[in-house]
Image (cartoon, rainbow, N blue to C red; front, side, top):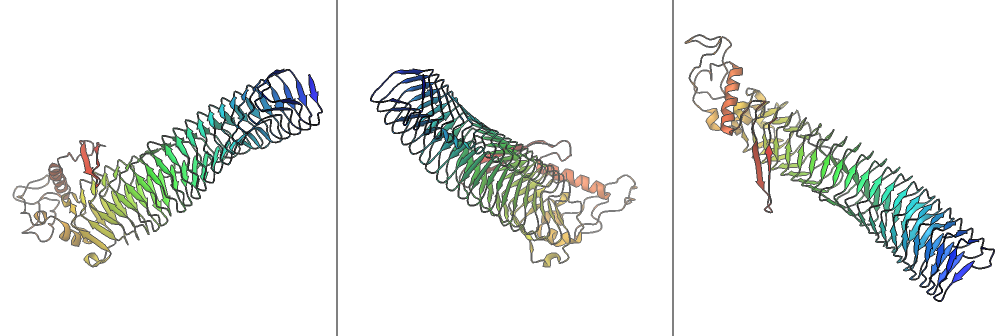
Length: 581
């Protein structure tokens, strides 16, 4: 049949009406093409419904019906509109080219929407709002001129295994008060963001793939508080996840990788909970960037293989706790621009840049971290950097354990700094700070190196208190900048120990001294010179003695594992093996 040109709807099914509409051409009616209401329950199969001035199909007032394999296109409002407790089944239709939405579910409408192609609609492929609560499965929603799926004000619904792609605006938008459930969907190649969650919206997103969108994978803003579990967020052309403007959210078990900018950006008073084994890696910039007064909790994640810092915190104060930050191509954790985070019990290792850098007024608490096996310096405090560096285990790094540059002013307290391939603690000209109760030993360079300190003990900005430093393996023992520190810090047994008996070395004669001279003792020596050994041999024997005391071989290629353990103030214990280079 050709049903067209009516002054109202083309077909009405109401008052528990049934019937079968098949192979009809329903078009150009002044209202909707088909109206189903008041218990109407028809079957509509392989009809063409188009160019109607309102909806293609309106299901309202407890309407039902089965719509299958219909072509619904070029209608002025929605292709299919469901409201007022109606619950139709819509499957295997092609719904396209509408001047409004493809499908709208509103005002407590429901419906099962399955295996449809919804494309080239102007405002949204699918809109759900005002208590609408459909089940939406295995649809392809693509190439729309607006949003793929909009879950509007107070919208609900369950969205499973759909493909949402190449839409002109966001693939999914969740608005005020909405709380949908998305699982197993592919949201990709959108011309803007993958998912936008706005203005006090919520929602649960499980095992979705959010990839290759032109802007951000997931945007959360304006007090929105969704939950993301085990999603893949990858290859987006800006951030993987952006949480801003008081946004919140819970992220657990997600893989966030290969994004062009930061894997996760937290800013503008946002405070998400990012925890329980999110894997944030292979990004072209930072793994996690917390900036512009962002906060939140970053706990128990793996952050690795990113081009810039694994975690960067600037002008913000998050809690960064129990993360693995490793194998980055830049800095492990970078704290700058007056940031004051808590960085606790992380394992930071094998990064190409410094494990941690503190700069530009930053004042973090860095406590009970393992910092080891880095390819550069372990912890660097740059000009303007401060911070409390406490109870950390810093070992087996390729260069300096703790480096303080001119203008840096940290408190370095009760750390173990050992077995590094460079200097243990290195203070450059103009460095300040307090160094108390640290254990420094077994490093291949100096245990402590101080440069440009002409004031010596009169330097009021440099304090050493009760440190345990293995001076026996200190190559630059005679540097004048160190003398007051050695007198204040060195073990009296070492300073005043009896002179060892002469030991003949290559180039010396019985009863005589070495042809290469002797090494002067630390003041005050008991008598004569401290040793008849050449300086290099003296250092070698001292290193061997120190290695024996520490119970660990000190040769470069053969260092046996040693265990690092501690118990936290809340009773949690931690440990990690130290492995040889």
